[in-house]
Image (cartoon, rainbow, N blue to C red; front, top):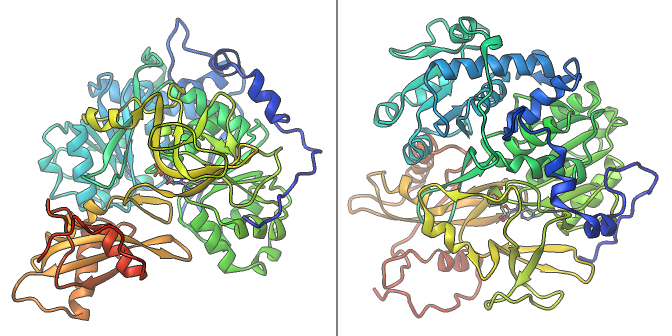
Length: 581
Ligand code: AMP
């Protein structure tokens, strides 16, 4: 707060011009459900809405995807080509015997085949489970085992990472290997299937889309909590309705747009806003295989005349660090909207964007469980830097107290949403109790703390749990602690998020050692390396401290709150449950 509101020119022809009026008049049926084409003969399939309907409606020649590889290779796909290829892959999956509701893991870099196979699986009635390619074997095993994976689509080098764990996934039927441009000489291991061979021997014209209903499951994404391993959030085909709507209202998609989303489909933003929202809105999507790079991203925006750019606060902070000088070397005149999600966006970043790109950065808020944007700084609305904006039409949000009653304006409480929005998660896979615990007295409890100002703008205040948000990735401390204690030197591990100016938080671990092991810099380095190989560089701790005693409750739970307070030099708070040594 303390930053001036940024008002807009008001000359633009945004999809949402009058927020208050739109909110008042909004009707889910007329303004959203009815805007889908629905399957011929009834039913709803999100991939059909994203791709096929544009072809049926005469827009097949429109460019759907511009793909740019790590080495600047380029491929372009029209909506028709995307339909044909995804139909083809749908046939492949049919021939392999996929059944409605089978879970198909996709463990791949952002290759065109990731998008083609995801759409094909959705069309054949399967559930997609995309994972970050940076994951080590442990997170992949945990998730595949938990979900009961039936199929895996991956690439030769990533498959090698999984050699030891795949035999343990008893539900797994087939492994399909994408060997793009024949990069590998012997890509297949015993029993593996070749994506390219399967695609060649199978015909899209024989494909008939599965008649999924809006209630069928489509996507499972894993998300972290403070206890236990990550849980699978299940979304239904119905979610596409809100993804389409928010793409239109919060990101202002029109069919003329060239849209660049920097999120990976391993994270919900990469499916909701990297597949479904843009393509249901008929935009041309730029997909970049490479990771963050100020120079490379700016080059892409200039070269492909990107109009809408959706990114995340850590990336924005890195761009701020790269400085304004480099921006002057590029032409950003095509750009008309920048959005951000995943972590709190510092008010100075909003202002910096305005000064350096000539556009403020629009923060919006949502989470894996909500499936789509819930509140946003809309293009036509004045931005309050540091705020997450106002709820989208049709969504009721509130800040509530321990009795589930709204708190007075400006006070901090639990951020809650009235259940029943179309993209609401349908389940935590096989964790009903945990799912039910999120719904109380007519509210969905988000797990975030927030406040609301007098005009209905929401302000993020923190999380209500121990989950760490590092560079936009939620990390459950338990997952990291479990990996660390597998090292012979480690007796116990407690993991916290330590504030960081760029990544918001970094993962920091405290460990006690087994007898015969002594704290040393070498051992600390070894533990970091060990957890990186098991988890991924993004999840593994960046700092390790050795402690003599791990603070625990009398019931044996590690008191991460206390570790954090000590790390930050803050008051230790209530330690009445601390176990005496
Ligand atoms: P995920 O489910 O991984 O997308 O993470 C969702 C969580 O990220 C939310 O519950 C928040 O804690 C955080 N988050 C997402 N968007 C924002 C935002 N705009 N401002 C602050 N925190 C955010």
